[in-house]
Each structure stands twice: as structure tokens, then as C-alpha cells.
Image (cartoon, rainbow, N blue to C red; front, side):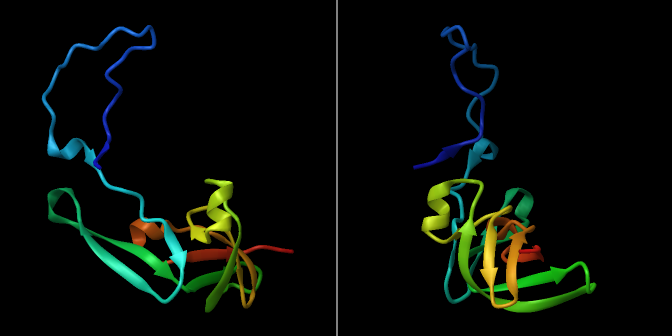
Length: 127
């Protein structure tokens, strides 16, 4: 089923808006990527204007930055601790921006958007 990125047909009062334009392909959205933990699997998606996005479907590697030591390292993702998008996402091990993940180097907060960028970038947090 298609995702629609347009306003509602109904006003807050319950009456209907008058159509000012027809349906356009640019108003269609796509289903969320819902990046899970697993062997890296990235899908290339065509966007408006012929550009591309990389959608990470599965990812087991994160690039974690330690601000105190001023260094970035590549590490393995073990688990999703907390996900502010939805409490069910933490149970299902879905990684989104703002999620707190458990890595081999400690806990980190995801700063990238894996469903849009194709990679997981995070900042190490104090425990």
C-alpha cells in the first residue's frame, strides 16, 4: 500500500477541503526502512530528480565517535537498548536516529539516519 505525503482531506471541523491540485507522483512516499541488526544489507533507491539514497535494511557495524579522545572507530552492534521512536522498536532491534545501541566499545547514541544514509554513525555516551 502506498504512503501519502500530502495533507488530510478533512478540516479540523470535519468538512472537506476543496481540491487545488490533482494527485502527483511527487506526493507519494515510501515505506520506512526499519533497519535491523544483522549482516549488512543495503538497498539503492531512486528518488525525485533521479538521485539515489542508500537504505540500510540490515546493519551490524557502527562508526562510533568518542568525543573525549577525538577519534572514530568501527565496531560491531550487539543490541538496541532504547529507541525513542517507539518502545516496540527496541524489542525488535530496529535502529533509527536517536536510538541508544550497545556496542563492543560501550553504549552509543545513533546520530545518522540508517534508512536514508545506509550507514550507522553514533556518538559514544557515558555510562
